[in-house]
Length: 168
Ligand SMILES: [Zn+2]
Image (cartoon, rainbow, N blue to C red; front, side, top):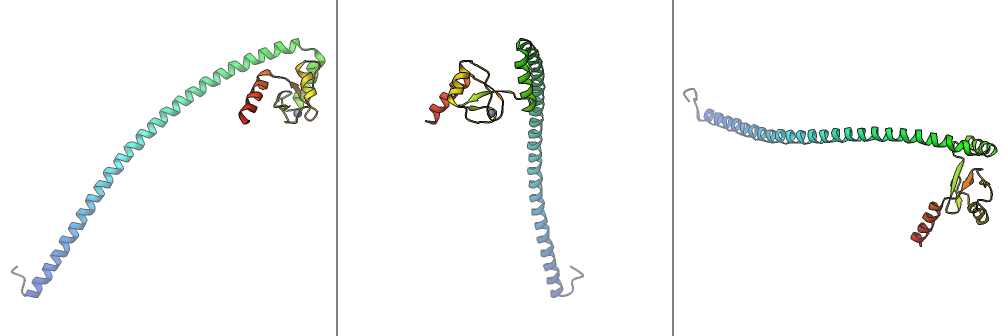
């Protein structure tokens, strides 16, 4: 205070002190806000880390499951191939030749079931007379549109009936 010579000088310094005090207050407030933000972010990081860990565990489980299913599928594929060879040996040669010709022409799908009175390959409606002949196994019937061999599947017939009941 010894260097303060006039009232005016004193007032000026007082105002400056108040300004600096207010700036300190604001900075402290901002620091509190930032501390809180840091705390929130730390919590969020913890949550995200937990989620990431959970997802990693879930992924590992799914990968294991997939591996197991693939192994089963491989076994089933092998069994089906064995069964296929067994069945081929029982089919008459001309019949098998027809089947192979259609299979090659139709991307591997030579035999299709009748679904709701239509060809399961091209969805063309099959005349009821044809379906009757097929059910009685009178002869080999092929779809007139796509040329695939048609078969009758009782389970699909039942499904058809229950589907019709549902829609009615
Ligand atoms: Zn067809």
